[in-house]
Image (cartoon, rainbow, N blue to C red):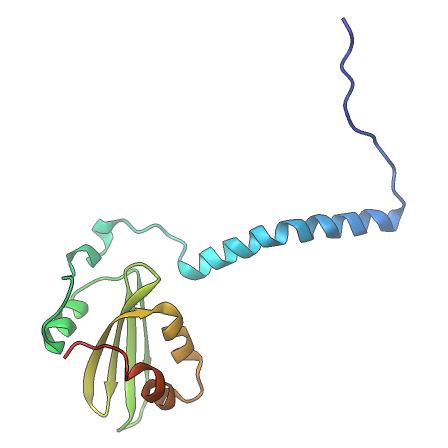
Length: 150
């Protein structure tokens, strides 16, 4: 019976070439690492939360009034919940974004003392809103024209 031989050639590389090959290996796995980082960004806690730990499944599909939406949202535990507060007496006073799926959610804004609820707002819109230097301008130009619950 013939003995099986490995089907590769072992080559000893000079010292610096080993580092170059090692660097190329890291470059080949970086896209996979980037995908994991993107997944972590979508789920910041990286924890699977079962429905019994949230109330998302109990939210109605739509709301008739802002007060009804505020009551339901206030009583719900969400996967994602962040807010911004300012110390101003007018303009944008506070904003809160809540989401059940890390993709879309409700944006609750208090502007000039009036609460407004915007359903189905993309997470990216919230992130841009948080990052902007002019939150009033961003609200007036981008968010105010979005559909909201009356």
